[in-house]
Amino acid sequence: MANGERLPLVVGPDHLPVSTPNQWMLFLRRPQVQAGTLTGEMRTVAHVHEWAARRSIDLDERFRSGNGLRPDEANALYQNLRYERTLGRRAAARQLTDANELVVVAGATQSARVTIARDYLVWGLERTLYRPDVADRRLAAIRDRCDILRRQARQFQRHVSEVRPERIGLDDEQRTRLLEVVHPEFKQNPFTRPVRFRNWVLILLLLTFGYRRGEALKIYVTDVNIRGRKPHIVVRRRPDDPNDPRANEPAVKTLGRDIPLDPTMAELLNRYIQYHRSQFPNADQSPFLFMSEDGKPLSLRSVNAVLERVVHKFPEFAGVLSPHVLRYTYNDMLDATMSAAKMDANAKKAAQNYLNGWSLTSEQGAQYARRANEVRAREISLEHQRRLFA
Image (cartoon, rainbow, N blue to C red; front, side):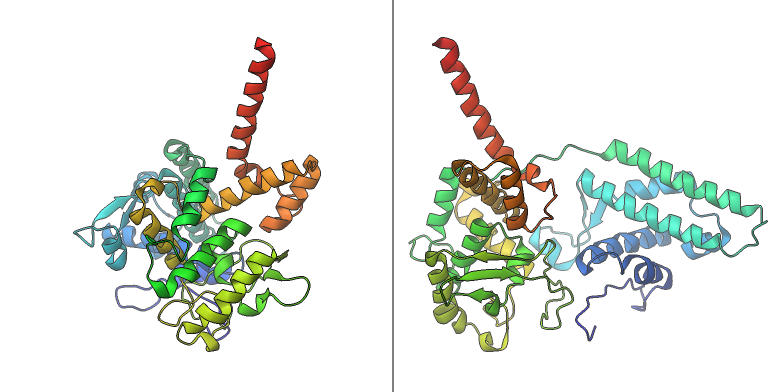
């Protein structure tokens, strides 16, 4: 949109917008969620309509009549949300021979899709409640249909739920090795010369400050203050940024924050901005800190591609390296630093929440403490054994 907002639309085979799902998006979901989440939800709603069309089910007519989906149809739909059709570049990325091949998504993904499909189907039926006269006998039946859809979704989700493996950060040896292989002067560095320093700085920021991909990619050059007595870097929320040409706009999902820079980090950022970023095309016309070789702001997918390239060159990182793993690693190191400073629990929580962009009362830090907790538990066990044998 002209104001920078990204607005996904469901279109039909004629490439024209499909009325009902887009009404749901515009009036119900758009005011509540960001563009990235909205796009994912609309893909699920498009899946619902495609599934119905293949079975000659007219969803609009089912909504108008108040009949909705029968219980057996709803179960079939929820089951079908387990599958995803690969198209175009996604198929090429997965090295699939058939661009229409179906892949199975994780149980947690299917469960999230079931929630969206349920909400959409219930919304479509509930709109019908406002059309008949209040004395119309169909109203009770329509409400029953909505309740059945909700119950079926809950029952289905209990069956497809799965225990997701907990992420943990890199250990000391892995972290040291990563910083070695991505250093610009490392002989086996997996990147071409023009992007080596950029990738080095990007990975350092993810590891040093625990940034999410979107946070790192939304940093403006002017957010990096490397002059004066107190150099610092700022993370700012810029939703629907008119300066951002990326269709899949990175987003700062947490609170903004201002972090001081160590002199060494400030010097690295200064070198990158002055001597490396300036070599990218259109660098003087873009506000963003990280640029691609074609002169555009770096994309979310490119951040993953940087780490995937490391994994391809150094298989020892297979299965243990991703942008979010670096966020976990940061929190492990942060915990160790705070413990060494003998901070009490409340002070540690407040500091961790601020540095991660969480609210001051957030409990999210517990999710990132697994490796630190394991290290402490092992140390306690060793101390217990020493005392026992003493």
